[in-house]
Image: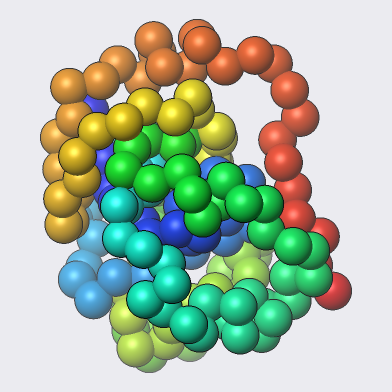
Length: 153
């Protein structure tokens, strides 16, 4: 199954349903639209990016991000269905998406549906990459629960 690696806390924020646009410098392949991908939390230490908290304040996140959002690294943490892509400098309005998450000089992958999966350690890579994991098996290990949501301003 295809996966995409994100640095924490972005991976956690995606699976929590708060961040529904993923920014990349490269264009989304058309074949990925409508596909479900695994969300991989990179091993990269988020402390290398001191502006994370400033950006979260900018988009209106008021709540503290739980410690696991920073500590769960180096494995699959969830899934997302890709609904489309915003092109750099696009002025299009997209209903249902908080465009403050979109970096206007990058391609914004629109995440239609998202969910949490049990943490599954594995290596990540740049771009979309293949993982020898079954989405159905991972999803069957998830107990039914409310999707976590962070409150915005």
